[in-house]
Image 1: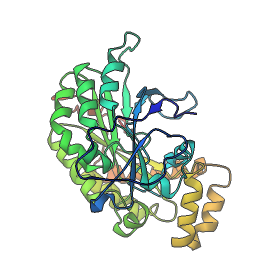
Image 2 (image 1 turned 180 degrees about the vertical axis):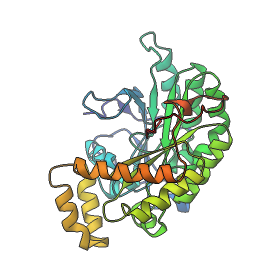
Image 3 (image 1 turned 180 degrees about the horizontal axis):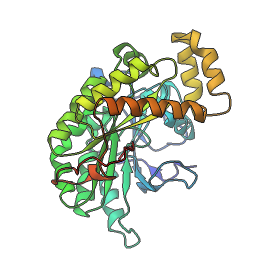
Length: 349
């Protein structure tokens, strides 16, 4: 069981305005403390507070991601993105990958102290740590539990390089800490903005900040001296992959002061695949045959479709003057970014 390293936290120290919670505990979390809160933003949600035994996790070797270590202080996500690839991880907890993933969030309340302890271990070699790669570390729960300031402070104190990918605007709360960290190590910040269409956003990403608010945060971070890359993901077949949608999104990203854009087509892993298919059949039934064709071979759209999508985003990026700098240039402060590279290449960091 991947979650056998979790135990219950002590009962003391309840977050303010905590209301008595009665939901049954998942079988995989028999000692967790379940809480609900009487504020509108947490209506219908349950938080399972646990004390983890470890927090810096190695990425499986078969993963496609370009990093080896991650920190994930939360499991489950109130962003409720219908396509979220991490949905299936909830089934390891005897919870479902659909509504439970959106409404039942596991909180590793001792994340900050664990990070500090593990960074101090003799075996730790100061490798880059990625955050926000499974579920968003700046989802709404972070406003209450405030785990990220402790984590960033620990990484700063050990001068350990790290990066954050988020859809959350709450990252601006921690801007002073991020600047302090960037003075002693490399800090990468990237935003996820797949499209700017408001109607589509309300339907497919109902718990996230509006895409325009995310781009306002990109601008605020850029004005603070960070070079921020934007992951234009996911691009949804038949919904946000038109030339008009791509152009409007890239234009908005460029106007926000981003230094790079990385397009990614929707991929549908088990768990997310079923939940997304249910949503698609309800909201856009005419697209079901197209999705069956695109994803008949597995989780990823055909390579030809992905290459064509990347080419169209690259053309739009060139048209709107969005060029990347030297790789990694979004991690250093207070130096200004270098001039654009002669050969354009799109990248996340």
